[in-house]
Amino acid sequence: MNILFEPAKIKNMELRNRFVRSATYDACAQSSGQVSDAQIKLFADLASGGGGLIVTGITYVHRSGQNLPFQNSIAGDDFIPGLKRLTAAVHDRGAKIAVQLFHAGRERARFLEDKNKQAMAPSFVYDDPYFTAEYRTMTEEEIWNIVQAFGKAARRAREADFDAVQVHGAHAFLFSQFLSPFTNHRNDDWGGALENRLHFHHEVYRNIRENVGDDYPILIKIGVQDGFARGLELGEGKVAARLLAQWGFDALEISQGLRGKPYAETEYRTKINRLNQEAYFRQWCTEIKNAVSVPVMMVGGLRTFELMEEIIQNKEADFISLCRPFIREPGIVNHWKRGDRHRAKCISCNKCLEAAREGEALHCVQQKFEDKRQT
Image (tube, rainbow, N blue to C red; front, side, top):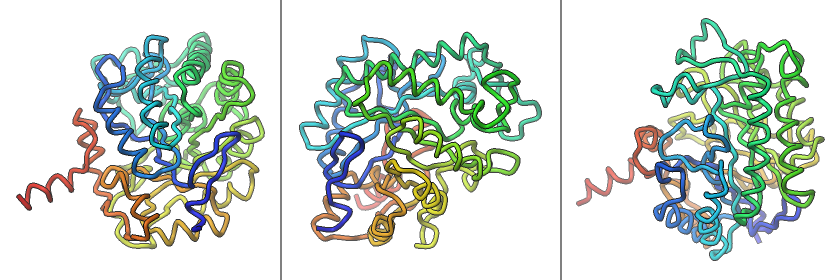
């Protein structure tokens, strides 16, 4: 059996293969944050497509963390029944599912400008060239409220039959804002030295663990370097990843922290059309894989099956995490398993991302254009 299709474990969660559908905002939730019928179909199709683990899109744990209009919520017990429908649809088709627990921090202001005054961050940054929307500094009481919201959300996740939770600690959102020295200027226990900037991560982990027990997998997507100079550097990012693993996070997905200029200084780089452009976080991931004892997921522009196989064989990562390829081809893992090892058809144009931000349901815009042209 090809190594990519061998079963693998994260804590006590056994996956049928090493393919992970990385968390992807789908703009399909009801405006209330409830699961929709469209999402049930989307996730059922993904599970039928052959992947091992599906991670949901950004699911906010507290209303102050919402940053998009059709975004799932896990901020109250009334969301559990709908989420149970989602997990059942995935389990019925042989895959496992984790919910991505999320808070936008100051990024809330970028997308919900009519609610600017509610956007919060560890500290306010003057003359930030990458962020001009209004927001304010969080109080310590507000920080603890958010910490507790993550724990409660994880308890709901377990009640809704999710196999794991993944904390979103990357991509310019709240955890990245705490971790980066560019956005965290606090002079209390939540800022300053690296371990203080990781205090929020540590307390969230502890609160989640108290709510879900010792046997439940807690994953994190961690931004180990910012997309521009003067932000978080890889040296500190590697130390942060090592500490997170030591504290008890059961798997790390390695990605970028704060975003710089679109799209070259972001996690969703574009025009990935050659093999040497793929796996753009490969070096980061490999270095962290060598420094931790928990499973590591590699994400970032992976398109070629043979490259993914090489990465796992070389022990540069334990899992292959894909986002945009599954939008174009939700059944690509099954194709690969049957021996059709074609390169993913995704051209990394990011039109799917731009459409979802405008409220359109997740779809491959390029595929839609090609279908129209053929008819």
